[in-house]
Length: 159
Length: 159
Image (cartoon, rainbow over all chains, first blue to last red):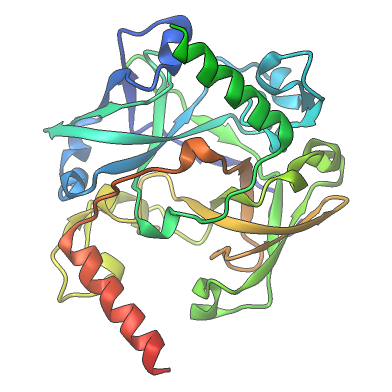
């Protein structure tokens, strides 16, 4: 390893949402990202993008959870054990969350977005515009992913 | 700010590539991600995905560069100044790179990918599978983005 120093990050702001528990994962959930006041000018022009990547620090993950090697996808014991890097589990060496959100508006240092699955008070590390380079064709996913997704969409239909 | 502690990350591995300078940004560039040996088991199942997100630490960015508020997109002075969060510049508070790559293969602790625009020796922070939830419709980008993209594709055509 040519470089094994520790890396220090500082939150650029935090998430403000009324959603609690599982409701955070609802795609229609609207949240505010409250940036540090001095970073407001670093948002200039962001409103011309429709979608953003939000990177956030999942601060509730313990040191022990960060040593997890394998998980059952979404905690489902009927799904095959997978390496953490084959899933989006928060239990990973560096628990950085990543979500594509819809940008609803910007006012000063406050960015309003739809679809951010982060809890109230979560520190935000970075915001990046989503652009055509991030669109990918012929995306393939494993069988377990499709089976969970099918189940989810059927559940939605019957609600 | 409810939480302003510093956050410490450790690289999970590093990038190995023969590409240097601008060639790193060539979408056909093949790189290896060499993970720490003990993390090999955390890759199990990743080969069932076609695409990954790679998060990496842009370690060559200085403390001063991390205080940048505005930039000309891709260094082009003929493009309007934008806030850093409206661009993908490495000059940002937390210089974490994010790229969607194509997964070519996995062998032990080595992940071979196509399209990773990170220099040789770059520390890797996280790898996440790209799935259908990350696909987004009706993506809108600013006029400056489209004009740079048009230029780029015309340049490619004439090469």
